[in-house]
Image (cartoon, rainbow, N blue to C red):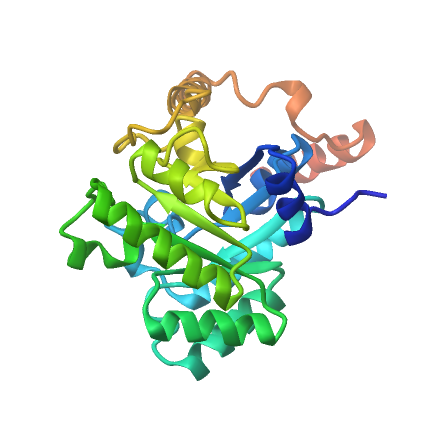
Length: 285
């Protein structure tokens, strides 16, 4: 029996100063493999907009696509806690937010992730939690607000901003969030917030002192090559591997070496003989 990672598991990690791992995934096979590798949390991230669908930013993906990716991931992963991003503009009011959060849970997510900390977001987090939908919060750089923030900009870069970050995190904790992602903030700021919260924090470019770490799986594997964030360590070079394999496949087709005799199906000798007789008869006519 596989022991499922839950929100309580992450809280235990926080309480015992144990780290946990988190990666994004958007499809069945990737989710299956990273789950088998022991990854604790799988985020069905709206980053799929860029690394899977080729959109310019995360704001272009919708709830329909997020639900589809969530279903695929939940089919592949059995142990990891599955968290799904609430797509941009999928929670413009409380009613719509609850409906779409519920849709992601019905698609197989164990929790949803919501960016921001406005009074409205706090109320949505509270209502989701009351209805049995765990919420992972997201502070610091929030990609869905990049047009307001002025692009991919590091957040909480001074003392006052760090205090504000902690205040926001505490409000989200009180509203019921079980964890909070800290994206693109100075390590010292993330450490300060982590040490003053009862819930786990997840670093996405927030340094070494958060409870968990998350990166985009396509970045980590070296598959997405349009750019590489500073905080990503590449553990592979899938771009080169995929290109090399595709080139070999292409060349083998051009040369006629693929498929080989071992890679095709054959009629029995008798059936082949009858077919040849029939072909010869047709040619006579």
